[in-house]
Length: 510
Image 1: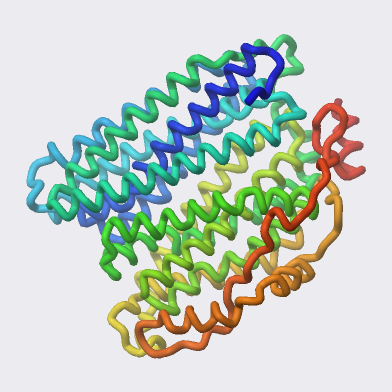
Image 2: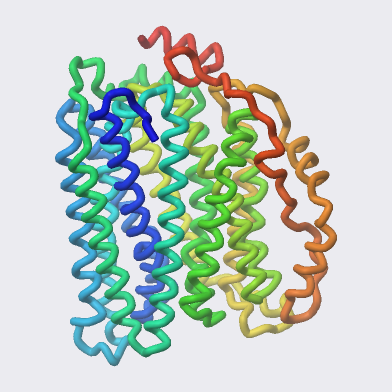
């Protein structure tokens, strides 16, 4: 598949696809299981929460450094390669930890020094990864032809997501087999060795890519001065970033604790952990084209609104049953919601921020996200110490720990953020057709004749006393049921069409 007339650029884009596939193999096959690795060392819920939030916050500072380096006008390729090598090297001490640390037979004592070491290593890992993100984004923006940008990244995303899913399944099965054979330490070591190799392959592919020269000062990133911030504010980007930050913080109240609940409370096997996690990834992959078509026709704000309606349901559904198959369905439904949220939020960030300030503002946006996730995680940790158990409400079950109460509060926080801030989010590119969120939901409901059957199936999955389900996931129309012409959402240069006020500001800027 050819994406550029220049053979040098086209080869670089093919290398980028292979880079993304190898990187996704690392993420799916190893990074996904870092929380399980911490729990292997008997880490507490508090330690798992810190491991899930603090390294990402500190690592996000790497994006600030990268944004400054982007404005300097220097070469990006050496820094991206160096970041990839550093990230690969972090896996070596991680794979050695379960094999070389003393007192392996006493994991409770190991947690005293294994978890702090994990904190340091994972922080370096995220810092190296975040350092390369703005540089890579700006580099790819120079390489990918504007008219083929959407198709290229859709093609790349499909392959990388599929690769990540396969790696996640292979890693989960391997870890389960190792656990059955009482060789869990060797199972984690094998996962991390594979991650080390995958990241090296990814970095090697990056090293073979061509980096176009930035010939003029106009090609360099522009610093966000007061005038730039005013343009960003008028475009609605700050309201959008505030909304996403608070939503991510609300998710983080419970998100990192789900692995703790599955492994420590429900005592899921690594195979069951893999299946529930993989369900999210697989459904997100399968719905990517559908959500892309909805965004092209009705706009990204509608897509963000629909995903925001689904977000509060995800943690609340964990209170209904502890049945594995029910929770697998919940996680799969999460793939539907997260696919819509990720696509719409990424597109809106691209639309709302002027191109010359995009790398700088993206770094600011991502630091906000990391800060929101950390704050939400700390709030969830504090709530876990004081909230009561849900046992009296759920029939006195031993599984109704305070974790479920935190899940419920996370659902309330997500709903509050959606109600209070979603209306502030604007859309720079006018949609081809206007459709309200309410009208879209009604369309989907009319396309779901099997809802009654779904209600009965969910109710029968209840292990404890029967529960009447008030709502269920609506079946989505198939992507091929929506007939589309070639989208006319770009101008002759391939840039997205903007609303008139934003377009005037962009013309004045140029």
